[in-house]
Amino acid sequence: MTTAASLGATEGIVTTVGTIAPKMLLAVSCGAVFMGANTYIGNAPNFMVRSIAEENKIKMPSFFGYMGWSLVFLIPLFVLNTFLFFR
Image 1 (cartoon, one colour):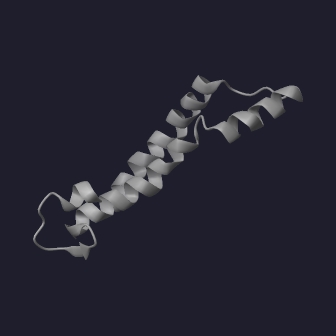
Image 2: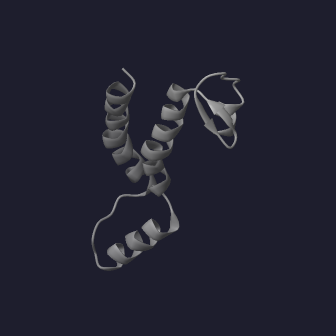
């Protein structure tokens, strides 16, 4: 939001960091919500669950396998969200 506020919008929503144009605030909000899903890939608790599953003989994908699944499912959802929210 600080970067969005530093762009010098004279009209828009007044926040504690400055005035932000509504479309820029929408972009920042959507980025935080929708791209947050990417932070779940490769974090420690997920690897712990993976280790427990593999100890119980359940086949799990590798880190790059998870990345592949995220590309297959998340990228099309990001494109769809872009068309839904920013047309």
